[in-house]
Length: 386
Image 1 (cartoon, rainbow, N blue to C red):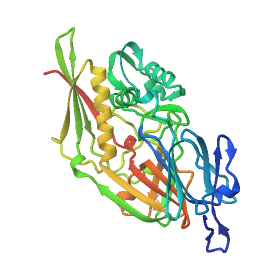
Image 2: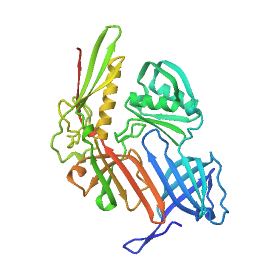
Image 3: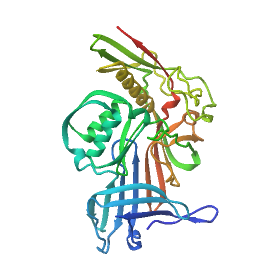
Image 4: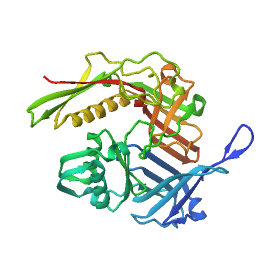
């Protein structure tokens, strides 16, 4: 039921996909019943999801059992298809008339041990070691953990009447990371940095206005904090100290996009250093967010301040665009440049926060939700004692 598109040059192109059920390619008779197919690729801990809508007017379609494993590739005919990963059937709905079957599948099964509440203390572990414990406990493959996060030492942390999913999310928030589960493995990484969980730089992509048919740009002024302060208390020294991160006002530069990255903190050397772009997080010198929690040491306070600072910068502006011709090669965390919009949009570099790929009778479209690439925003750090 997915139709061909007529291109200006006269060539015909059609959305294409392959769907395997338990490693067996879906039969053509079943493929022909598909009315629509939607994939949501997300950055956060919420599982990616796949929704399939089938025509069952003749009542002959066999409904799959919950827990069935699906493997999806999508793209365009006569081109290589992109692997969207594995999905586990979560919900099956039959409705009518006309009779249709709707299948929802997710990239991870959170119905089992992930939802079991437990209490446990972790003493003298690294962050990576705790993530690996959670992974093994939930029968997942070996996790992929960003190198800069793996060896962070955690003297003590409690999991108190929390399920593993919530505890994993809290760990990520405490250390400026994001956690997700894809293809049966926990991915624990630094968000909005244009790097994979293994630390490799992701290739930049470019979109032009003619690629899309709808877009929305938004500046969120109430989130325009210019800095973050986090406090720590040293029990042995009986002393309180504060770590303050304040954004450095950006220099006027139009050459930034020639560079793959910018320095993260003032005074930190980098072979990829470049002058920062214009920033939407203007705020004021006094517009500083003070975290309420008191941290056990300076390192923890610094990580918390860094995490909050990056999230503020990433959330201070958003840009969404729907591409008339779907791009299966675009996924969450891909870094993007855009061209042909207002200068304030083109001058900013972006990170894909979430992607929705849709295949239906109208063709194949992709909707992108973007956040700011935080490595372009520099800050200075200071420590003070009251």
